Image 1 (cartoon, one colour):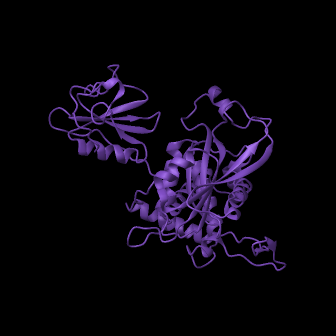
Image 2: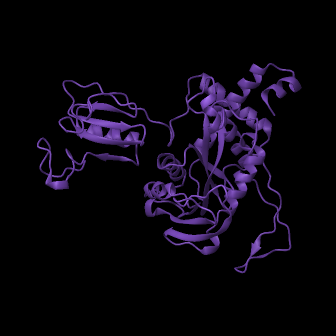
Length: 396
């Protein structure tokens, strides 16, 4: 229900309702981020859309639109066996956001003392192209990966489904490692998407219960995930038996996702969530801020250096990438760029050494960082090589 409804029913101030929601939402975000050492054998991932403040077609007529207004996509990762939702990421369906999602999934998997995954998982997704580069960078050959590519009867010139689309089937493809055809599907995560749309009004197809800010939207999502993992008891089912797919005639009770995955040993109640919220709020007020986890934004401040900088890093806000240049590079020109001015789509950051510049570039964009081919790498087009660069190909 809405905050105003809570105000009327429980006869408390709307500010009290909003304060409790913010504290519980922040606690839920921190709890989901703290999940570690998981051992899922089969992982299914998918994305679904919602909107913040207004839909895309209405953002232009908003009186005071915020930068987060419009469509927002959320990635979800779930263990197919225990139904535990252990990772999410909000953003667009592009490579940078998919890479942050894949890195968060990889960070939550258990590793042994040698740094290897304790259990080699099978990751199944749909045919979104961003997943390929994202999971290749995050896990490489450490995991098996397969996709369920859906086919539609009506598509545009780029192969994307049109408004007249009709589902025409799907193709199972193994992208890396090995996988059984029976395990290459997204049925469980698709069903979980339906549960999310029914359990969280912000994800209803046509809703008037949308959040006005992205942070509140994330708080609602994290609370729903935490409730699903710890408090929700799934209904009994008739599991399939044998390779022929026949169902058992007997109903079997299922454990809550958190118990089945070993995250907790008991069923949680709402009172437990409130108690954990009070504990989290008390720790935060005492100055014990939650640690920075994988996937959090990393901001690099301009370096304080003595003398003129020797290297520069160009950080592209548009492409979500970084590139290291020498100060004498024709593409850099001491941080002035080719057009002698600051760009709204990026920024130049100065550094006193190539080591510091490379480290900063990797921290800002772990999956999309590079070096300039003219001043630091080899540039063979037309045999050109910058006069101020090294004659030997240097790769930091």
